[in-house]
Amino acid sequence: MVLTESTMLSLGTKAPDFALPDVVSGKTVSLDTFTGKSALLVIFLCQHCPFVKHVREEFTRLGKDYENSALGIVAISANDAGKYPDDSPESLKNMALTCDFRFPVCYDESQETAKAYTAACTPDFFLFDGDRKLVYRGQLDDSRPSNGLPVTGKDLRQAIEAVLTKKPVPTNQKPSVGCNIKWKPGNEPSYYG
Image (tube, rainbow, N blue to C red; front, side, top):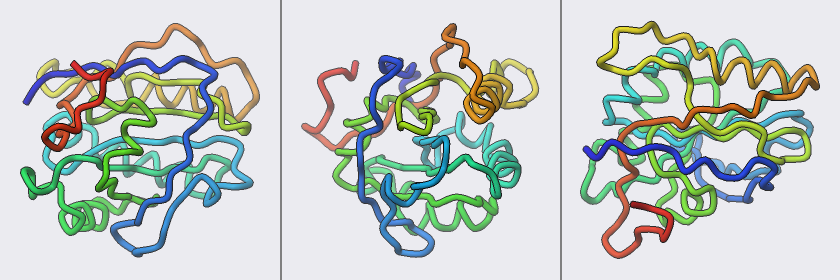
């Protein structure tokens, strides 16, 4: 495990489009899937990372809390499943079902979507407004697997509430931190490490 921070993509960046399979339903998910939603949260995660395991229950709460709201949520895993079979589509499906996620979990086999978002770690969060412009990227909250702080989702939830109520999202944002995305050999992006 290489401890990695998010890249902190520039605020205002337009959400890159994608077309990825949902590991549970098999349906293709894209930005168009969330047409009509006034905000979109894109989460990069995986199944095996201790940082993701530490916050999985909050992912479940987020999905349930915003299931019938104007927020769309999609999770994406881009890890090399050849070297990390715990992050295969089948394992991701088991995680999504076991955790009762109320949002699609997609597998980015080519890793091109992760690159387009400049995702670097798991978990990595990108929140977009109704125009699909980036308004938040950074941490879920201050909790880490080893620091004893409770998982509250405070930072991300404040940003979600601000964008949903058309208030300014605070721009003082702390990077997320977690395991590095497991890039396929020779596929590491230029922004990475």
